[in-house]
Each structure stands twice: as C-alpha cells, then as structure tokens.
Image (cartoon, rainbow, N blue to C red; front, side, top):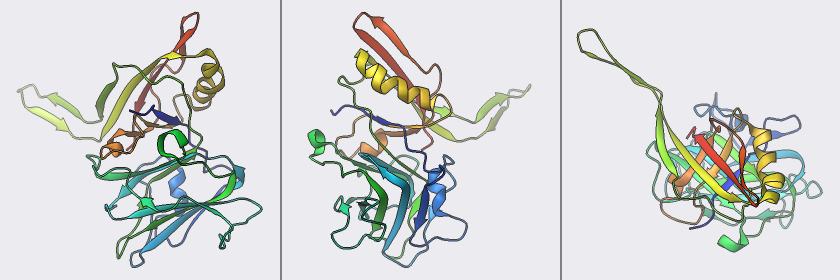
Length: 276
C-alpha cells in the first residue's frame, strides 16, 4: 500500500489563469473545470476522436499531480496524455518544445465509482511509479483520445503539488455516505421520503506526524483551505483496479487542525465529504 496522496488544487479561476478547449459544446465552457460545482461541466462536441483542455497558468509552476473528476461517459479504452511547456517554450506545443507524460489510460482504474463518474490520476512519483515531474511549466495540455464519436466530459480539473508525509495514516479509517435526503413519518405511520444526493465521506487520521512536517506542509495547507476550500485525497495511489474508488475531492468538515500529542509526535485528522 502506497502512502496517501493529498493536495490542495491550484486556483484555476484566479486572475491570470486561462482555460481553453479544442472544442466546446454549447453551454459547457472550458472554464467550468475550475469551479467546485460538480454538475457544471466542460463538454466537447461529438465527432472527433481527440479533444484537448489547455491551462495557461500565467507563469511557470511546479506541478507533480493532476486529477480529472466527473468524467461522465468515459470508456475503458480512452487515453490521456499530459503535455507541459514553459513560458519560454510558448503555448504552440511544437515538436520538441514541450514535455509529455506519454499515453496512459484515462480512467484511474478499471472499477468505476458507483455513481459512474470516472476519475483520472497522473502523479510524478519516482519511488511509486518511476515517473519524474517535468520542469516548472506555464502551459498544461490534457489530451483525451479514443473518443470515436463520443463527447469528452470533465467536471473538475485539480492540479498542484502533493503533500508528502513520512508516515501514512493509521488504522481506524472511516468510510461512509452523507445522504442529503430525508425520511420522516406522518401521524398515521406513513413514511415520508424526500430523496437527495448521496455524497461519499471519509475520515482518516495521521497519528504520527513530525513537527517539521506539520509546520512546513500540514499547517500551511489547512490554513489556506479551511472548511470552505477543497482538497484532493487518494487513500492508496498505487495502480489498482479499485483506485478510482479510492479518490476523493471536496471540503474538509469538522475541526480543521493538528494535535500535539507528545513531545515528538503530532496528529492530523482529515474528515472530508466528496463532491464526486
């Protein structure tokens, strides 16, 4: 089991960032992949086997992980290629002028989430998968291929730098569902049901975090995100048929902080409700 992957995504809706697509279906703009509304998606037209999303970050940035959520309709044979170019190289992606991840399966595992909304994961981790990160780059292009006559759909693009802790989370992890519906009973004993969305939830605890990790990595993340921002979490990022179901993206809930448990040990509890 690989250590959990956690990161706060870059603000892709910030000033100076531009998101474009090779083609866009009406009402489904490319920039929608930057917001946290799971039902507001970028969608391409049909009829072309390859579609691209390109992100101009405005300046070179160091990225070692990217995830695509809400890949509605994605099929096992579809592929993903990520390409990156520096400010000096420019956005043209000419031959030899950019870094390429190489072709990989679009879906992060063969087992789909119960809701049918696919998830893609790219990570640069030399110890885990032998992949090294590109040099800091400004332009990032996500090429989805194998579509045949289908449309590409992406609800959320998350990219950034992963948080790396020496010790993994402890046993006692909790996995559940937050049901936004409601059940009540009438005075006559009749069940009154209002159905709502069911969002996956997770609670894990990193019980042995080093002080320097808390100060340099954990506290900056939680102070920046709080309860209103979002984070991406993969409980086990190693390649596996079930990996899509091990991916979470959403806000942290409850107390957001760390606990100084002993002279040399800290604890960080992460409770999250996933939008996907």
